[in-house]
Image 1 (tube, rainbow, N blue to C red):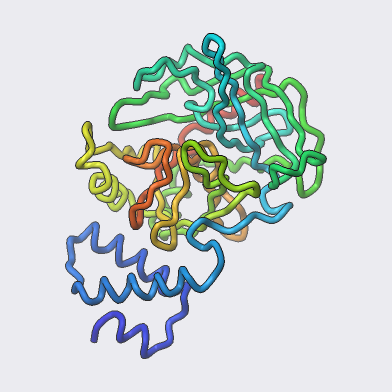
Image 2 (cartoon, rainbow, N blue to C red):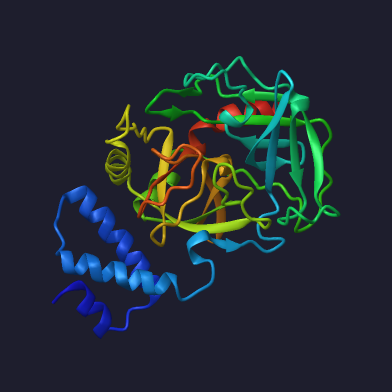
Length: 331
């Protein structure tokens, strides 16, 4: 019996179809097992029918106020001669005065691929905005400037890799706690690496957020969320190789010691390079766990990828808890 016959005869739910598709994807990537072309096409049709049954499924779902009060926008001024531009990413409130984001969000680019961790932006050139998921809600959105910045000393980027993509911001003035609008995310105690490894092996369902904007566009006015499934490390390697093997310097490297990856639950769902720094939040035993930070999309640059099942790479948070703890406790 074919896969689709089983689905049709047993009235399998949409969510089960999504989970089944992800499981099959990981199984095929790891084992090399072949599925018939007809089953693949039928699965794609089933998922296309599912995607078009609801509004804005392909681009994520709008976030409601109070869902993620720990997520903030990180905006950096870039001054070059007379030209002033802005780079925007995301961060997570660890305390009311400390923000976790990516290394790349805090580094002054020098036009080269290689990152110089000593070329930090000026703290006052970085501002953090919190208080509302709607960019138009100026009454609730509060801006605080940076006082001190730090990036991981091992942060490094090559043509095919980006590792230890972590940055920290000490704010000039701490935010005031506002229930449902401005609240820190409790940072878990990763006593060992087994927690994240277990979630990966369980294909845990997680969520990421962002404006969903392409390079050169403003994106959505309201923050959006996107459900994703963690993929096994071997699946990540193979998907990333497939996505980048034809690029000029490819294929990209995947380093499971400092990275995890995930794919959108539905095909063509992904986020963009300008959404970097946002947390990857997974559910474990009825608790929200921050597993990683959005780092980059292999082969996509800052543009939103349109490839089916494009993997998203995240900087793995559990391996740098000492780096984070030392900064928070000392400032």
